[in-house]
Length: 451
Image (tube, rainbow, N blue to C red; front, side):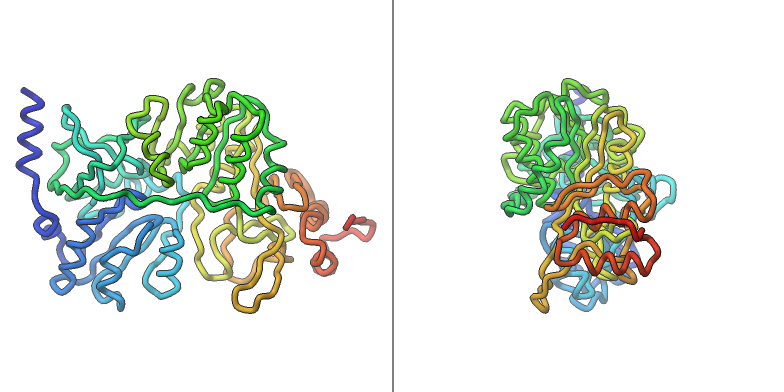
């Protein structure tokens, strides 16, 4: 009887995308779920209302395609879109003046909605089909979805049969009784293939993997370098590893298929992978779907240092853009140009250090080639450029890794830090970095630096 009632509610709320988005009014705040759960049909229907609307503010995250509302409004006369974390798509839109960034520590995102009462007039989520109990599921993006839904005045779901059902965990469900409008739109999900590693990536990954012990819990950040570490782990002799991460990526699937990922030694959600959003290949999505060995949680849980640190030997692996001689790392901007976002990097750097036997790694190639000039430049700099955002303060700098080695900065003075950081810089830049350190009074005359 109850299931029949849920089915009746579903039919009553089922409508077309065009009808559903009529609820959006001038001046509204609209939330897209973001990541792989960004609405497709609803986005297009909202774009088609461009000439009827004004002052529509839209929040999203890690766009995997250009939103239709951006395409139809190249002068931002109607739609102002902002992102909680930049993808390559978002970065290009930002460079064109079509996207803004919302600064955040990722673990705080649900709290921003619940404690700061961010306005949400209309929330849109892509979800898998409803189950017999009347529940939808947030699929590949648990993150802050429940908090957004709790704050929303109107909730619209876009049902996509291809969206996996994520097992909880917590805060992964949305009941039909809470939903105002339902639309159906089956389409392939956006996928992201791991970038092929370079030889330098493999060297850096090898330096990190040799620090990992059996029974470690692994967190991999966004980007090619952490994924390379995960792939190398899958090829190693390590065993009984665990997963506690924000982003579930294909490297975890590779570890699982290699028999390395068992989760049996963890303290938090033992025998289960803990994650909050997932972006990767279709094979990864198939692995997630209805998998009882997965536990999807809101990011306020996965990224809370005091939660993750309950796992012994928590190894957190993330990458950055630049590091200065004080140990400050920027992982999100180049000068004032926004590249990605703070995300959960500082959360996991902190949690890795708090964990018994844990370690937090920030890895980066020692140099990069300037696309404009073709000039080789150092990622180790005397001080971060004006306007560049500090993602990891020097007070939380622990392990730094390049192809020239790894150093641990925890508890070190400024001159000790300068010496160790310069030791993993590209040899061509070390003398200039030493001169800069001398000018900043963070160099000892007795320092000896091997080339």
